[in-house]
Image (cartoon, rainbow, N blue to C red; front, side, top):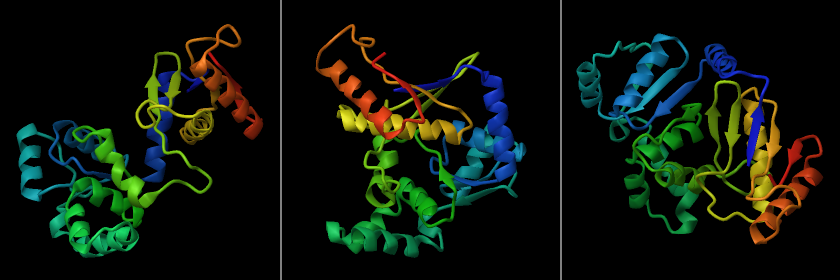
Length: 249
């Protein structure tokens, strides 16, 4: 599934993102605290005043890596937290245990998991101590989203967890979903992915035009996969007549 906007250039989209970030001043947690790309991005974001950052890791190791990279560091905007030394560690693992104990999780397991930066960072967002988390430079997609599946859960009314990729081209921005989470979605799941991907596009200032992709367009082909996309398209049209949607394409 893809949504696109042809009237916006990539530059306009990036300017919109920058101006929105400056206005909102959110706190973002970065769990992969010793990765060169993460630290470089954090330094640039802080220098430009786009967000407040929380980096997870041992402070001495993170700062040593910062010095090694020669980064311009802004401590007023960047805090470094070690999960095992954090004053929130106990509250976080107890919250995880409370949520997952009926699934068989023990206190010891909750304590161990909360030392994992993906779990700790996700819990920061869940508890309102951060507005969002950016991960995946080092950790796999599965490792990144597993904590969310266990205790954040989906938005009310949404059953399917899915992902979107923003593809910034010279003359437009495309939003592709889902390319990372659901390997073989049903028609109902495809429809929900299309709708939630369109909502994600709107959240980033893009008015979506939705195309449900297949190896065949319209009625030119047949087969289980293309029929499933055709059915998903009809579901989207019925549930969200306000969306511009076509498929299969």
